[in-house]
Image (cartoon, rainbow, N blue to C red; front, side, top):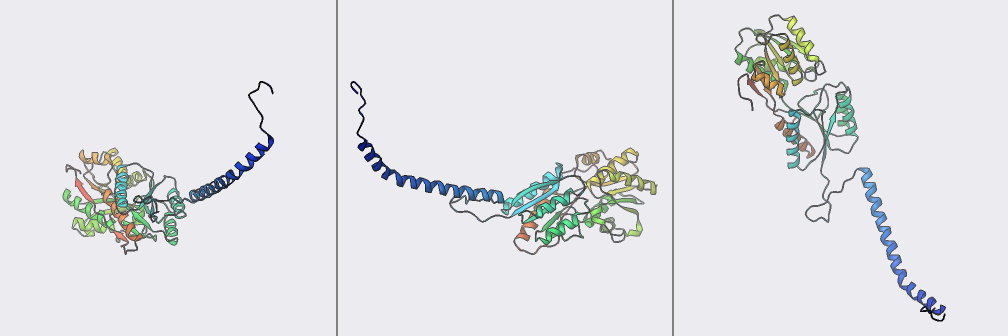
Length: 350
């Protein structure tokens, strides 16, 4: 067009241009398709790994090769935030870090069957073992046995379920608690002992008074034969405050009752409540077990005459050490004792 700055080129020029450039672009296009295909494959593999719960672990030294998978341990505890459980986790974690073992913490509620149901779910997961602090649950024995059938070792902490096929128990035995209670009562210098004993249901099921490990330990701690002192032994029912009714019954059955002994924090709080309500603080010497602040304060005020404390940090370390030995194929004892420490009213607590 006259006066126009645009001069159309001949059609042959455009045809020749696209044929020449197209030859150069075609290899680049193929390379781009290949890169996209590789990216798709990598994305698919990572997606499948995520769905299966596989977590790649990278070697921190070279960052080019993967390190061997570390054992994965589940810790199943009551849904509580008390000091004992916090310190227990401190001990477990310290030993796990030292032995290069990964942990996952799970909680079970107060509803009946919650504990056994959670354990059953864990045995279906990809875990190497379970650390369990059991409470009263009639189905827990079957759940522990099921885990053992799947070759998943269960190490019990603090509370034993001796009729189960648990791999090991870590904690103070009933005999240890009885021995320490007897030693403390002996220090109180009571002339004629009429004792009431609240035993843990899980520890003493199907045991008679004569064969009770706790009572035998109590006798040894007092340095007296069973016939030298009067005692009444009761099995504490499940439930947070179920022990209160039991304490009232013991007080009613023995008007001369002057010593009341508990074997777990739950019953210790129940017994403390009843003794205060009944205005029997000066007549009944309460020997309790537990780390609750309320119990420690009652000891300072001499409402409780003796208090037995466990060592939760060491308990956690010993439990993790036992599990570590099991995973390494080392021989372990089915029972690992952890000492307890008793204190009289007026003594300094740690």
